[in-house]
Length: 309
Image (tube, rainbow, N blue to C red; front, side, top):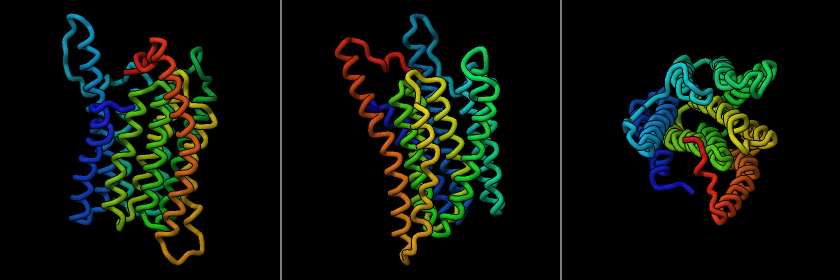
């Protein structure tokens, strides 16, 4: 369960920031403001959560100086903190794609390989993974981002950007829930924040063709969070859940080419297909985590006390 503070940082704050930027984009008819809104909403939540965690950790150490720290060191002490710094160029690339307005902008998704590489590089032998696996995961992240951004751009012509971005929102939120349930509480909140930030974009930008640009931000974050959840968490995200969640956005194509006259019907079917796939993973995972937490709590051992902060 989310605490009141976590709910504000992971849900309310990104929605407010994203809605303000997206509303300005709607008013001025700036399509590029939609990926900017999604990215800034996520980034604002990330900064606030990081600062709160540092302050809370310092408050638990007698004599420690309590201060708000808004960003990790550069380079980060841990591979997973690269997500903070990677979010900045991801936002730039999403806005750039929207400004260029070219179909080949999906190729900018190749930057996801860089995000995956810097995240997993600290785990290379003799720790957890081999160099071959490192490069494999980087290629998987890039391929997934390019494919989903390309298909998202195609799908929005058939079902509208609303349903494409909502599909990405469902997947990202599902990833957050799964990682949250895998004893990596803070990064689960980041996934929820990314999903919350896309909500206002989907609603306010439904007449704008921003799906491909938003995907260039969302999919690398999804892939990186899944890698963090698999390699850094204990227990981690299973390979089966990893694959299902990373591929789930592709299911938006299920309704995109159905021979239905009404666009909203095709969109609903696409969103429903994605939601079913995500729910098949998040439901059992969240339920198992809840049962384990209740069992451990009754035994006097709350696993969340050991979660990364």
